Image (cartoon, rainbow, N blue to C red; front, side, top):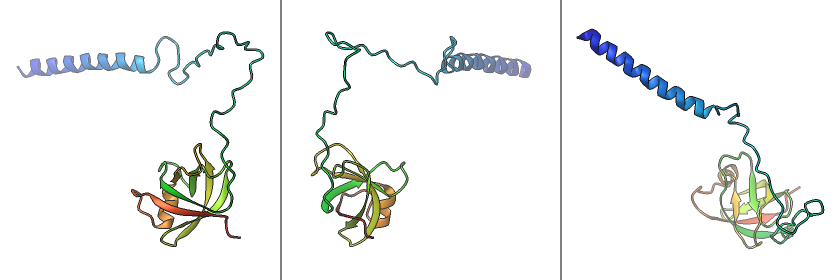
Length: 150
């Protein structure tokens, strides 16, 4: 009886391994194609547009205003997986350094990164900058953006 149970258990495990092997062949791409290199879709020009003379499209959003040196913004927590001291904000058109000061009178120098939107729109602050300013990660913070000291 004991041998029958062990035999049936062995057969069941082997049958389960066969199912896993089928899934593995699907995940590995099977059919000679690599799963890590998907093919790019072929883009076709719109009807009536000559692909040889078509010009690249201009960005649809208006250009971001230049940073004037002093502004106030409301910031939330940005992507916590991105390291460093940075703030994504519509206040700038290109990356630059700035000093940000919280209403708790703490300050830190960060890299301002441009994002699309109105200058009055909100900003996103790195987790490192929020910690340096002593701000709660779950709250919105009003920040003053100034030129870097020095």
